[in-house]
Image (cartoon, rainbow, N blue to C red; front, side, top):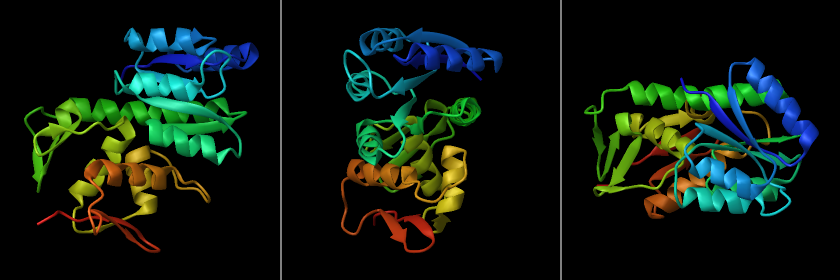
Length: 228
């Protein structure tokens, strides 16, 4: 499993604290104190995952994320102000994979990063030719790609995980607690809308079918309906 982390945070004290902790946990850490430097480092392909603060002194973390998503599928975990749901929602719409509120617990941050990197590494070990087809969708695990009508979908790392889990269980209900654990690597907590935001984004990218391909089963979870 690769473990090169780019930490983009303008608070010197917090950045240094997180960098020390991540280093002690076996990560190789690159640091940036502003958005422009962080964007340049991320686009330089010198990291495996990005921890990105939303509030930066030059350009916002959301703008950095927009520019990143135009060029790369590099996984991104946002650092957001505690209780600021608007930033989190916009972050997911732009293409964030996960978020953690500030002030953050370094141990929780490490757990989030490890879970995301483990899922990516697992898929990369899968045989490249082990493709699976579900109607007009084709999943190629070795490439971590899902194609719709032979056109690659623009998915974040986490959107890919959520959709491929739903496809594997197409026609059956996947409980939200299970989907959260299998796709995001963590437990579902009260008032956590992370999964809902990813589902909303996936519905838009799949074409906003009526009824939607990803159906909400109230009180239980979600089910993927293969179009006829």
